[in-house]
Amino acid sequence: MPNLYPLVKPILMSLDAERTHGLTIAALKAGLGGFVKGSGPRNPALAVKFLGRDLPNPIGLAAGFDKNAEVPGAILKLGFGFTEVGTITPRPQVGNPKPRLFRLAEDDGVINRMGFNNAGSEAVASRLAQTKPEIAGMVGVNIGANKDSEDFIADYEIGLQRFDGLADYFVINISSPNTPGLRDLQGRAAFAELLGRIATARANLQQPDTPLLVKIAPDLSPGDHEDICEEILGSTVDGLIVSNTTLSRPDSLQSANQAEAGGLSGRPLMTLSTQMLARTYQLTKGQIPLVGVGGIMSGQDAWDKICAGASVVQIYSGLVYGGPAMIGRIQQELLRLIINYNFDTIAAAVGSRAAELAETND
Image 1 (cartoon, rainbow, N blue to C red):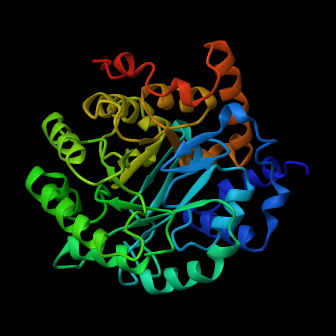
Image 2 (tube, rainbow, N blue to C red):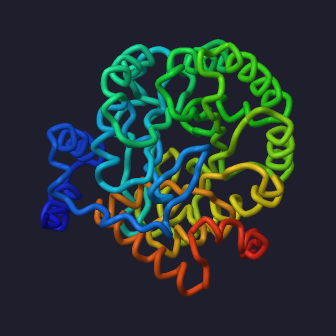
């Protein structure tokens, strides 16, 4: 199948970013994913075990793309090793006023202030219940809290209950910068309460062994970061996703859109998120699986995340600029890097450069 994305990319980039996203979802729902080039044949050197599941490769799609679980099967057919839907809140939420999604084309970056816009847990769970049996692959469910909720933690408890039996893994998203007060749950006392209540809710599920991850921000203070890692090691949480978008703005940014409020992702996030990933690997002593996300635009970027300590990686903003063909390209580049660095498999490289990549460039 020819790769048609280069032909349609100029048209898509000329449209409002959120409209382009909607058209992409519509195209995948219509079965047009076969008209873009994804990955090639599977290679056993890229196979990994993640949260007890065997995956064909370590490249996943991050939450935020398929918010309402409309196309997880189509996404997996593009060549991803796994995918993650959401973020999903208990009640439907329209999110923040538009425009709220901005390309930083000169920087290969994206700023969003979407605000957890989604159809709500009832609608999304009903859709997953219908489609999940036909999906061949791992589908995680990223859950969040409604903006106007009086008890954010209760919303996560509701999310666990509603997606019990439908999620291959859960993600507790406490790191979005676009829900006021949400990141306060990353403080030690609030985080400890969150972990305790989530553990209780999880124990009462019909499938209490469903793996659970927590997604953290790249802007944590060193103290808060250390506290979170210490609390995680003493909890029933199965892993961490490092990291969400950043509120910081590197001096290197060129786009006029850099002044927009919201979380920054894409290439400008790569160094910050990778350093935090490597430090997380060190602080958790390599004892729990980590998901590396933030700024992956190439196979080298994915390799750096893995060497920093990630068992698997996720991409999203990179697709805006690289299109689906980057999935196969990253896989091919990873295969070359495995050979170049004398590893037999991608899994053998996990954490191999954590000490080096944890160092700052200050």
